[in-house]
Structures are given as C-alpha cells and as structure tokens.
Amino acid sequence: VQLQASGGGLAQAGGSLRLSCAASGRTFSNYDMAWFRQAPGKEREFVAAISLSGSGTRYTDSVKGRFTISRDNAKNMVFLQMNSLKPEDTAVYYCAARPKGSILTMARQGRYDYWGQGTQVTVSS
Image (cartoon, rainbow, N blue to C red; front, side):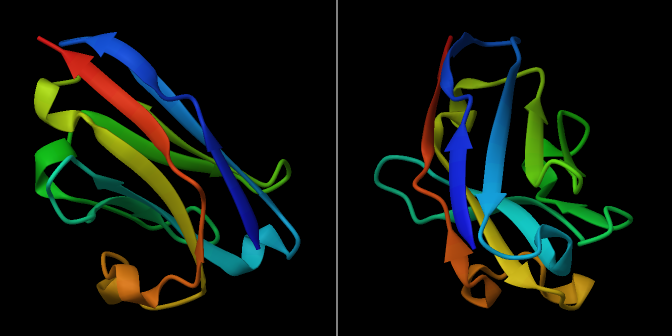
C-alpha cells in the first residue's frame, strides 16, 4: 500500500485543519488505518485509528472530543478532522495502514506495515 498524506499547514490555536491520506496499490478496505504524529524532539505517538469497515475507532486521550478520524473506502481515503487545535498539536502527522487486526492493538505503531511521508501541522498560539 502506498500512502500519501496531505492537508497540513499553519493554523491558529482554536482553529481547524483536515488531513487527508490517499491510499493506492492494494484493496484499501482490507486495512485498518491510523494517524500518528511526531513533534520536534519527541518520539512518534499514536493519534487515532479506524477499523477497515469504519465501525471502530480509537483516539489518544489528548485529542478526544477534538479530532475525528473517518474513511471513505470508495475513494481509498482516510481523513483526520482536527478542531480546537492547540500549540501542542504541532507535529508531523503520518498516516499508516495495517491488515485487519485487533482493536486492542490499534495504537501500536509496530503493528503498522505501511507509512505515508508525513504532513506538517503547525499551530500558533
């Protein structure tokens, strides 16, 4: 699976951005999808994940209620709607894919086989 993330940019605190990730190469609906992020000087961390059907989602606590992950299997796309942005959301955001797995392991980046190139999100205060 080839993944291409886009939609990053500069936003003010309290603003919104919508990230997109386009997938190609394999049957998209066979893969769980996720977003991870890496802030300067920090390790990459889990943000959100969605099951292959879209029926199951997980979020890291710091984005619950602010971010929403969704997917469109007909268009081979996954999205991350980010609202009420905070400066601490500043990071490079990566989309990732893995074959269907347990919802219990959705946050484990080692379980993801395919990664996009990342898109920069910068939130100013």
